[in-house]
Every structure is written in C-alpha cells, then in structure tokens.
Length: 385
Image (cartoon, rainbow, N blue to C red):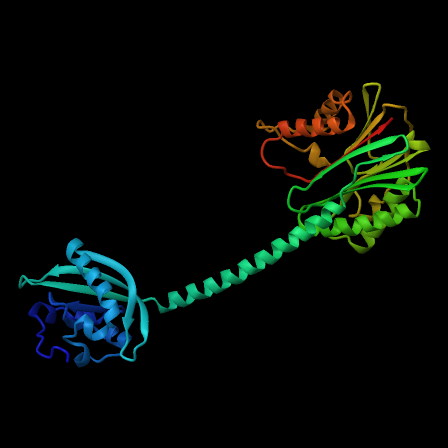
C-alpha cells in the first residue's frame, strides 16, 4: 500500500503551487525513495491519482527486472548530484511511456536530502524516430534498387563505347571513361562494308541518367543513318533534325564528329559540329580539323550543312578524335590543358605504337589534371599502316 502516513514537508507545501504550474511532470522522493510529491502533469501522464501514488517506492510501480537499472540511476544522482537518462514511465494500465528523466539531489531547509525528478514525455519524438527508421529503411531499399539499376545502365553504357579494331590498312585504338557511373558520351567504330569504315564520337550535354538515356537514343538513330550509307555531313544533319524534332528540351544540346574511311583507310571524309577539333598527324606535324558547324539539337537554325573535308592519308598518318572531357581539365593552379596542351601530348607520343600512344596521352592528361574527373572522356586514335 502507498505510504499514507508520508508527510509533506513545510518547505514543499510553500512551493507546490509553483510546481503545479509546470507543463512537465515533477516528482519528489525522500531519502528512502518514497514519492512525497507528484504534480498534476506527472499524475496525468502516469494516469494515477494523488492518493494512489503518494508514498510509493519504485518497486511498487516498476517490474522487478527494471529495479536494478533504477537503483543505478539513483546512485548516480547521489554521487554526482544530478543525472539525466532515458527510460520509461509506467502507467497505471501497464503502458510504458518513453521519457527523459532529469534527476537532481537537493538539501532542504530541514537538512534532509530529497530527489527531484523532472519527467519529459518523448512519445512523439519516439514516434517520429520510428517513422524515420522506417523511411530510412525504405530509402535504403530504394538506394539498393537504384544502384542495381545503375550497374545495369553502366553495362549498357559501356556497350556504346567505341571498340578497337583492325580494318584493311587501318588500326584503331579507343578509350572511354564516364565521369560518373554512366555518362553522355558514346562512340561508334563500324565497318559498313569491305570498302567503308565509319567512326563517330558524340558528346551529350550533362551527366548521369538523363544524359545517358538521350545518348542511347541518339546512338540508335546514328546507327540507323550510318546503315543508310549517309556521308558524315548527312549523318550530322539527319541526327540533328531527329533530335530537334523528337528530343529537344531547354538547355539540351550535343556535339558530334563523324569520319568515314575508304580506299582501305587511305581516304578520309570528315565532318563535325560543335566538337573539339580532330587532330591529323602526318610526318610529325599536326593539323587541326575544325568543326564546320555549331552544336546540335537545340535550335532549328543550328542545323548543320552537309559540308565535309576530304583528306588523303598515307602510311603512318594518325587521326585523333576525342570529347572535351580530355581537354577541359585543370592543373592545381587552375590552368586548363586545352587543345594546345593535348596537341603537345599527341605529338610527343606519335613515335609510339598505337596502344602505347593512347596510354601516353591518357597518362599525360591524368598528370595535368588536379582532382577527380569532371567530364566524360572518349578517345579514338586511328593509324594508317
């Protein structure tokens, strides 16, 4: 039975009205851990009336298995004078209310020590925490799904990368690396017949899933135009018209360079739009093949002409095609490598075998670059044997 004979000290009688005004529960116990006071907020939270709870000790309110924990918290209060911990408040109906207990030991005017505890209901906080855990679990599941999708998308994207081939008197080495898991570059190295081989590099603005999806669709349309035996200029024009009509959105554009090799690789037809200049290396000198048109896909007036460059190639000549991720890289002082820097790397590597030249160029760009890769990188080097 509660300690019905437990008396309220005079000093407490003088402060009860103040404690009753508080929104948080307040309980005061004597040195025997008997509850001598509980304000209305605490009584409402625990759903006891004052007579039921007055004089109770912890063993009258808590199950036996929790008493050792309560005793330890009380001992800490005695040792340090104050303590704060999270536990639960037992209700009369057996429900456990999650709460923060802030305890403090005081010495009353009568010289007796009392234990003052402020009880803060954290039910809503716990409900929100549980919702957050459930939401985080769903997000983690979704993240795993996205990562699995990205792995698959990366495999698809890698299938759009150009492949190294040997065709008639022509050898081609390629490289592709996205700035993220997937990117917006793609390349095509496609023998159309025993007499013609097409090489295309395309750079779609942006990075990530959206750019990769657009690149995939443009890739399909480009293959369709190549199968129709369009020349490089015609490929650029038809792909631009398709994208402008069916895919164009605000801020979207792409660049493209297209090369057609014929006569066993000794004749080059070249056209480009908005793309970094290709590099033709012959007799240890380098010539830039500039784009004849601006970027594609965004404006009807940027539709490319079908003008093309015709170039005769000799044994030992090399053609370098790339996307701007290879030149728009910066060193620690903020200087961009640029086309001149890349041209210097290309010229220094022209005596190397084609695979070694490709690696030397990539190593040179990597040595210049400060920080992670900022853009997708595609590189195609062709050599006439």
